[in-house]
Amino acid sequence: MSSTNTVPIDAVTTRSGPRKASAWDALREHLPFVFVVWWAHLMVTQVVAYVSYRYGEMRSVAFDFSWSKFEASVGNESSAYGVVRPPLEGWQHWIVEPFRNWDGTWYSWIADQGYSDRYPALAAFFPLYPWLMRWGHNLTGLPVETVGWIVSRLAFLGALFFVSLLVSKDFNIQIARWTIVAIAVFPTAFFFGAIYTESLFLLLAVSTLWAARKNDWLLAVLLCFLAVLTRSAGIMLGIPLAVLFVQQHGRNIRSWFPKVFLGLIPPMGLVVFGMTLRNANLGFFDWQHQQWQWNRFTATPWRTFQCVLQGCEAEVRSPNGGTYDAVVHPVSFEWMRSAWENNFRWSYLTSSEFRYLVGQSQVTDVLVTILAFALIIIGIKKLPLYYTAWTIVPMIVPLLAPSSVFPLMSMPRFVLPLVPLFVMAVVLIYPRKRLGIALAGISAALLMLYTSQFALWYWVA
Image (cartoon, rainbow, N blue to C red; front, top):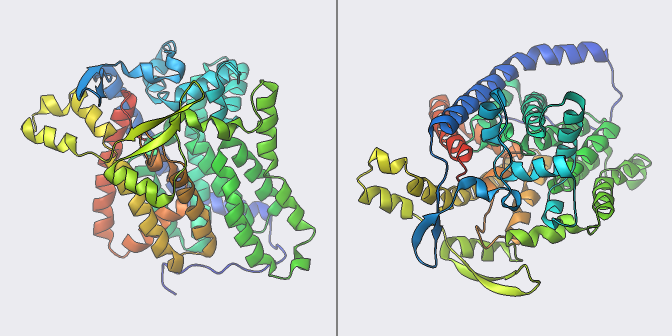
C-alpha cells in the first residue's frame, strides 16, 4: 500500500485490548515530535512578537480612499469600541500584550465585563473561550489576557497531538508529522498563540472527529457541544460527523437507534449561548444578527469573488438602522508599485505606510482562498469523504456573507482549523521532500513577517 493511501472506515466493532496501554503507546509515539514542533512554534512566534513590539513602530497611519491619502491613526484605536486596554505588567507586557490585538480585545472585554446590551457587537463572539479566561482569572488572579494566552498555547499543544493521532489513523505517522509541521509554519499560524479561539477550536474540532473515528460517539458529541460554544463553525462539524456515522453504522436507519439521538447534544451549544445573550438583554440569535457590524452583506460565492477581484458596490446596514451603498475595493497591488518607486529602500519597506498597504492589499486573502478550494477539489478523490465534508461548508459559508471592508475577510485565519487542507498539501508534496522543505522555509518566513505585522496592529486576517 502506498504511503498516502487512506485507511478505510470500519463498521462498528467491539473494542478490545487494554485502554491504558493503548493511550500510553500513543503518547510515546506521538507526543515527543508534537512537543518539539509546538515548542519551536512558540519560540519563533514569541521572539518575533517580542522584538517587533519592543523595537518596532506601532501602526500610525490609515489610508483614506476618499482623499487617496494617508492620515494619522494609532493602531490600538482599532480595539473593541476604541477602548485601549491598560498595559500589562512585567513579563506579560512583552510576552502576552503583542498577542491580544484586534479580536483579542473583544474576548478580553467579554471576559472582564460579560455580554451587555450596551455593546451588542459582543454577541458575535462565542462564550467558551472568554469564560475560560474569566474562570482562570478568578482562580489564579492573573489578567484575563494572560489566562487567554495560556489557554491558547496549551490548547495548541493538545490540538497538534490529536491531529497527529487522527491523521496517522487515516494515513500514517509520516503524513501526520508533516501535517502538524505544515499547520505550525503556516503564515497565519501565530493566531494559535494569540488571544483568539483558533487553538481551542482546533483542539475541540479534531478531538471530536478523532472520537467519532474510533466510534466513541458520546465523547464525540460532548466535544462537539464545546466546539459549538467556541465558534459558530462548530455546528458545521455535524456534517463530517454524519458522514462518519453512516459509514460506521450503514444505511439501514433502524441500526442508527438509539445512538442517533446523541446528535441532539451539539446544537444545545447554540441554545446555551442564546440563553446567555437573552440574560444580557440581547437577542437569542444576535450571534448571527450582529454580523452586520462588520459590514457583512448577502452575496453568492461568485459575486464575492467578483467584488474582491474587480470591486463592486454593496448595500450594507448603517448604525442608524438604515442602509447605504458601500464601495468595495478590489485586491490591490499598490504596495508593489510603491516599493518599486521607492527603490525597495529598507527605510520605506519598514515604514508604517508600506506595512499598512501590505496589510490592506487582500492579496493573502485571495491566494489562500483559491489554494484552499484547489486542495478541496483535489482531495475529493484522494482523501476520506469526511475530510471533504469537514472543509467544504466552512469554506463556502464565508463567501455567502462577505464584508464590504474585505470581501474575503479573515479567510487566511478561517482555514487554520481545516486540517484536511494541510493533509492534502502534504500528500501532494510528500514524495518531493526537497520541495516540501523549501516551501516550509518560505512559509515559516512569512509566519515571522505576519507575526510582526499582527503585534504592531497591522491587519493580517
